[in-house]
Image (cartoon, rainbow, N blue to C red; front, side, top):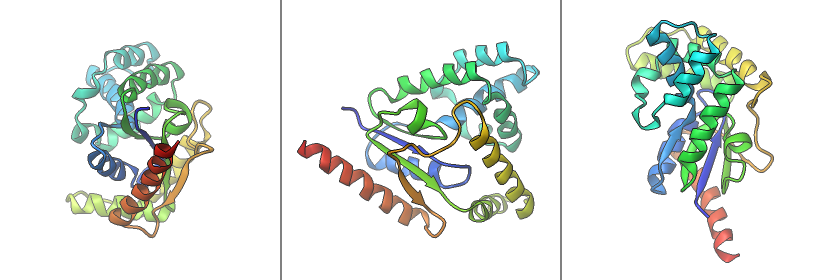
Length: 212
């Protein structure tokens, strides 16, 4: 059975950094599924099309090349805001989920908000990575100021709380832990501690699997 590691969690929980570390450690390809929605939104912005244009978003989703996504470009705040409007379109989600499943078929680490519940419900290991909104806002604030960008902690916190409510409250594929996911609260952890805890969970799972 291919090793698929599904990592879900809210914004700024550290799941992306953790996913990249785990992918490198286990020599697996990695996909940040959130970037796929950002890529669709970015394409609409490039073309000057309304973000509510479902047909155009579907076309952009079908044409998306997962290997050509530019994280730096797609990580811009404006793209993230646009992506939140695209991500609520059920047809766009279905197109991108199909692409994400193809990517994962031979084994991979995927992180997002519905990996363990929708994209890869049969994943070998599922992690739900979270942290308090205040901790996540502080991390995002520190990242932005370290990069020389102006940032307001209170504004970031408000954005995160609004994003949480939107992600958890949407009708299609809401953010929630899979029933068999391992909860990893990183509020009091740095990346090394989080990586160590996740690695222990995964290695224990692999050890059990090898004895079956």
